Amino acid sequence: MLSSSMQRLRASASIRSLSTGAFAPTAMRLHAHRLDHFPILRETMPEDTKIPSFMVGTKNGFLPRQDPMATLPDRFAKMDSLLRRMPLNLADGSKGLLANGQLGDAVHSELEACKIDDITDERLLSGKCEILPAITHLRHLLQHAHRPSIGCRLFPALTALYRDYTFLASAYLLEPCDIMYRKKSEYGLGRQVLPSSIAVPLAQVANKIGAKPFMEYALSYRYTCFIPAPRSHTTSEGPCTTGRGRTLSRASRTTISTKGFILNHVTMVAYSGDLIQHATDSLDAIMRCDRPSFNRAMKSLSVTYEHINNEMDFMWSRSEAADYQKSRTFIMGTKNQPMFPNGVIYEGVSDKPLFHRGESGANDSMIPLGDNLLQLTGTMPNNPLTEVLRDFRSYRPTNHKEFLEYVQRRADEVGLKEFALQDDLSAEKSGFGYIQSTPSFTINAPAFYLANVDQIRAFRHRHWNLTKEYILKYSNHPVATGGSPIVTWLPNQLGAVLSTVIEVGTHINPAHLDTEARHLVEEISRRANAQKRVLEREVTALKEKFGEEAVRA
Image (cartoon, rainbow, N blue to C red):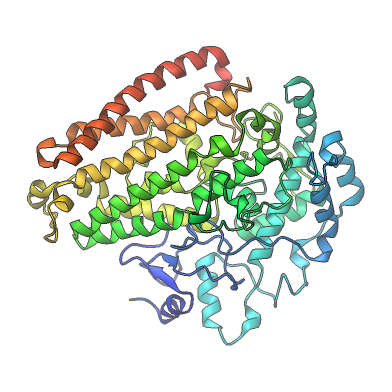
């Protein structure tokens, strides 16, 4: 039974709850109650500043609920000035601070530490309160709805501060590496100490929003973009042609290719609300033993992943492969990178060096959602490369992490894969019933599951192709931006999914499928077998070219 406060939360915050399940097994569980519903936003509530900017919703998906804050209050004017002068090339055609290695000196002479804890600007705060874990905070706010001063209006501003401090930290630490790379195509060493003027406020704001004090894919890069225009308005040039999809002046290099690269990722994530809807619908349907509804959800999920994969193909036209290396330096991390052999000291924060992974699309939540829902996560090899994958998945907004944990647990509890692979005959034998519907939505269930696994395969195959063309062709650096071995890490996941496609396809009884589904299963299986053979040959050749560092996790 839900508490009255949680009932008010659902009503007031326009939150959709699953009919089954529990909160993620981390800080989101309230001590006094067993909460059986994970809250998913129906509306983005852009005017509500009392809840995190990144919350899972069926409209915004994994994108922020509102357009990012473009301008910070006056007290951060010095940092804002540095960020606007920072890029290698400015909008007016002149050279920025990074072009001639002037950012470090500018930080030392201009920037003072701004303590986040004592902010009184009413644009950032309205009253004093703790930043509680998200669900506890929401419940607390609703219990005191008649006392608006209780609510902290911090989240959009904190996210903007986090974005800006992480961009500045990355640029400061990696500025020497960029200068070296432009001269010799080598990175050399980065700065080993982050000054307190950046380190202290960055650590404070990261702690408040539950993030790591270093650049993250969603909270940093994705929060540089306005929410994209409606998908019907996107073109091969990307959403930046609409006027709403423009990037903020935060990237180290503001070229067309850099903007196209970032915005292509954002337009892909614009489909994530549909993924969340169909994924949760499929879990609900299993609990009702409603096979037709489950199959419809799985078919819709596959179509949505196909849209995302098609959007991914626009990367080739939106961002030139040869340009990628020009800005890649500034998204490198400090973990497992030769530029930071001993990590980085955060002055005024810790006397011990800190290590963080760099910005990577692997931090995105769309494919992990599919992995967890389809029960692919448990099929990954038990090796150091998979441990890197698990570590990557900690670099995302707290609400996203907990939602993905929730989906994984619920899919395992209800046995989604087993349910999906039952056909109309074996379903009754196993006790999985279904509501009578059209034959195609009963006999083709295994094909719908396989089609979704194949879309995950297609995404990872595209990612691997982009890596080969955008990175391996132009660089001999053995480590990816996130600190993973460049040659073996992506093939580790792609190979595992290819094996699952082959295994599932082998066990589907073609006699129980209609003609269209049978041909689909045959095509998917044939392609997976061919790609697995090619992948193994590619990795063998690349290991010889790049050496041990590019292989070992």
